[in-house]
Length: 143
Length: 143
DNA sequence: TACAGAGTTGTAATCGTTACAATGCTATTA
DNA sequence: TAATAGCATTGTAACGATTACAACTCTGTA
Image (tube, rainbow over all chains, first blue to last red; front, side, top):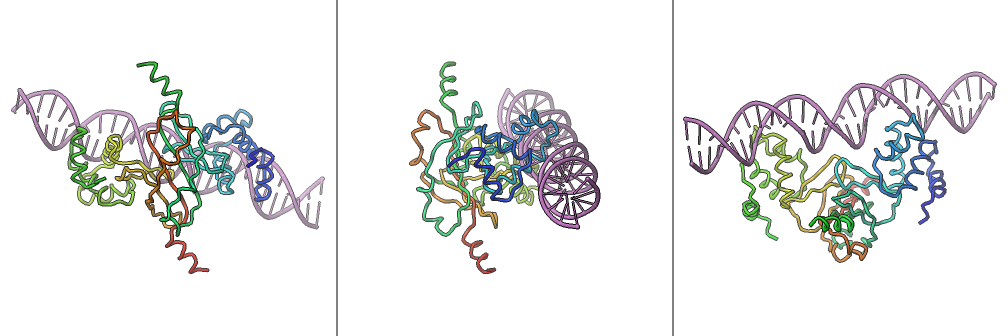
């Protein structure tokens, strides 16, 4: 799927979401920083461009984008809600050492069991925790 | 796996975790209420038996049990950490209407992609959201 | 009986998030 | 251009789950 800024702007129009400067900037940040940022990260970074920016606006914008299906809310840890502009199904791996979140492909649909045939599934999430290759090799160095 | 109360008591001993009355009760509650309770639920219910119970004790106990690998922490929604005595791999489905959390079997290991071969995976989570059969049929009634 | 160590308790602090009211902006109409 | 309505933004206050911390209690040992 094409996740360019232009594509998302169009998509917002079709959803009747008006594009203020602040919303534009949040969207732009998400498309250019695919690191699953937190509200804090987005706010701190955008404040450099928009000194009057309010954190409430960031929260509001992200809620609107999520409701419109344009961003996916990722909750791996308590007190650390993150946002992903890539809403296609994929897994997340969080390194318990460095905190980085990695994407990985996973065909979750192929595993949905018969038990859920009578359920309506709206949202699918897969996330792992552990150690990334870099942190693993760092640990070995200190042996 | 045998998840009886007796089994868990033994397991705690092997991990050198002493069994106070409060910890015993938390463990007992978890084995008898497989509904993935929140701290609030556990605390409120146990307070009937132990009027002096402190919520801090519930938090402490759950942290110790989680660190010992005896309970699994489930975070589906922000501000709603839940605890599962069943630490075997399985998926969770949360109904967005009634809030119930359903277990379902899933062989996630069969899907782990090559991309993660260099990662050390310590924790695997799968959770879906949507509508359960009961809430679905209730909605149809109101059509 | 004294003591040490661990467990429990209650309060206060923390921090992410939300509620809310005031202000600002934008598009439409006359 | 001016007036207006409606939505977006802002800042502060409130909220609520969780954690920090210090005092107290319990248990087992010498």
